[in-house]
Amino acid sequence: MRGVRSGFLWAGGLLLLVLSVAVAVTIGPARISVGDVRSTVASHLGLGESPLSPIRDGIIWNLRMPRTLLAAVCGAGLAVCGTVMQSLLRNPLADPFVLGVSSGASTGAVVVVVLGVGGGAVSLSAGAFIGALCSFALVLLLSHTLGGSTDRVVLSGVAAMQLFSALTSFVVMTAADAEQTRGVLFWLLGSLGGVGWTDVWICSAVLAVTLTICLGHARTLDAFAFGQDAAATLGVHVGRTRIVLLCTTALLTAALVSSAGAIGFVGLVLPHAARALTGSGHRRLLPVTALAGAVFLVWVDTLARTVLDPQEVPVGVVTALIGVPAFVLVLYRTRRSA
Image 1 (cartoon, one colour):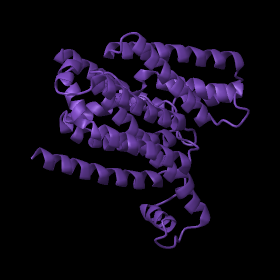
Image 2 (image 1 turned 60 degrees about the vertical axis):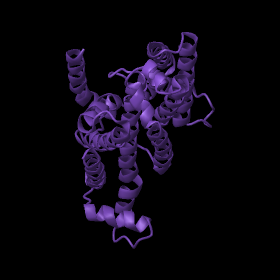
Image 3 (image 1 turned 90 degrees about the horizontal axis):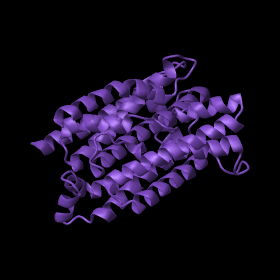
């Protein structure tokens, strides 16, 4: 019975995601219908000719479609990372940025944009990705030096987060002009504007690999729910498994942050919502969480780019406005269950 319910959830979530993407692409200043979206996608896949003008076709295929799809990929990826982090660290308040990846990415982006490191050969996304990896490497080094327990990992992440946040603020305050500061701040708050198909393909590939690895460790993640000692008793290689999954989720988070900036609360709140639907078994939980995160961020991004049209609101601002009340609810439930 539980398997049938999970199947309905996956099928319903996938259908809702497809409909959400199709409808979200139609929303904006240019009047576009779902039929126009279907025709454009079919023509670019070699399944017929599009009756639309080149301008309308370009709006759909080159502007709105990659942005909407990347929103779905980012939402799914952040939600999956949050689910894995909360299980590995046995902390319901853990999220993808607990390892300092977001702060490191921000520093890398600022160093490239403001200081011009790389001489134009390194893009903002590449700088952000390199910064994220440096931050994660520091967290691994600190946590290993301090003993490698889950609380040491969290504390190392907090230390790295504060360090790289301070470096980012220092560079912006001492070297950035007003225009650079505004651009960097908008990116730091999360933005899907200006993304292209390359971002979609790269992030989708990393998400597919990460989800495959995490699903392969689903039983192991279930064992972690009983604690490290219990997992070891059940035959889990605790240290190796934690390193593999932490590195995998950190790489996915780095890829997503380098393309879309820091979008908070998705990986914190969505896993709890999905858990209420599927239970704690990760083979069912991970796909449902990914679909829920994808649908959520598609509509958040749609709201962010249209609510104050023609001005765009950073996606991270909207997720925070929605996520803070949900975060308070999570805290309240955690307190009640304590």
